[in-house]
Length: 373
Ligand code: SF4
Ligand code: SF4
Image 1 (tube, protein in one colour):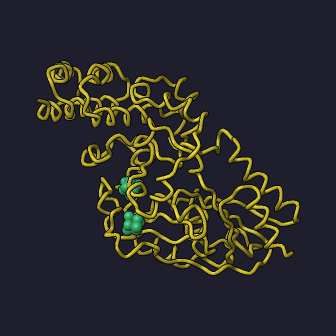
Image 2: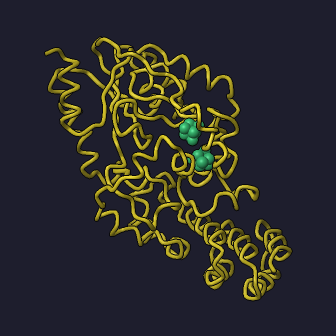
Image 3: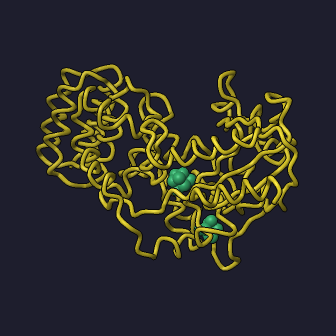
């Protein structure tokens, strides 16, 4: 057997859903796409992290000959009902900090590469989806996610893991194409709550809930607060509605007991009222894109989500946040949420805040009072 077959066998034996190979040549189509809309991608083009640099693998790794891509199915088990619509599925099983069995699978594969005498590097700057498509493992959806070609019932609940190798291996047949059925009338575009998917195959990151839940600085844009609904961290909406994902979603999968056990830690009322110790112990190790120091970011998201729940029983909690939270973004969002929920108790809390607040919060209180009824 050749090296390629050995690598393929080991990857499948370890439980990866797929493995493919492409050359280390620049990912031209990706570069072209980014360069056609640079104003949308400045945030991933800093000296520290630059996807265009990642798309030219040999710039950083002159010894690179091949990009090997692994496909990890992150939806092997069921997700807790309480977290659906709150935390994106991929983040619920992100083990990069906690280093569980999924992480070990990758480490075992790296050990195999080493045992084969290969020089290799994993680098998260390398565009993962385009690498996977060029390695023939996935096709694109109009929602900009990628869907497995030969595994996972064709679903998109996957992570592509590109690994640079120093060995030239025959590339697999690329599948850089759209795989959507002609009868689907862009359900993903229609379902995107914020209009981030502004046309088929085009997504504006700055309007995506994922970006706005953990990356965008400052107070969440007024226009996005309501459409963001109860999503706290990421968003799965355009994948959930997709017919290509229904075969995978409509099956009974085994439970994930450890994840089930911690789902309650992410209850919105707990996230709104948590202190730094709780955040660092219960939340951050799983969902770490928001800095360990920025508990207020989560609290702001929780206030917005609670406002969107439409349950006036949440008013006392939000009123307490408006009164006592030391962070003005949290207080401002609590005011917004009270305005959205309305009712006498909400109005009372907002009126009491009128005299105390100015700066960022004052106008939010006035605006919320104008809406609260
Ligand atoms: S992840 Fe959510 S907000 Fe982002 S494009 Fe998909 S549906 Fe829209
Ligand atoms: S919802 Fe329809 S158009 Fe969108 S990715 Fe799925 S199949 Fe393609």
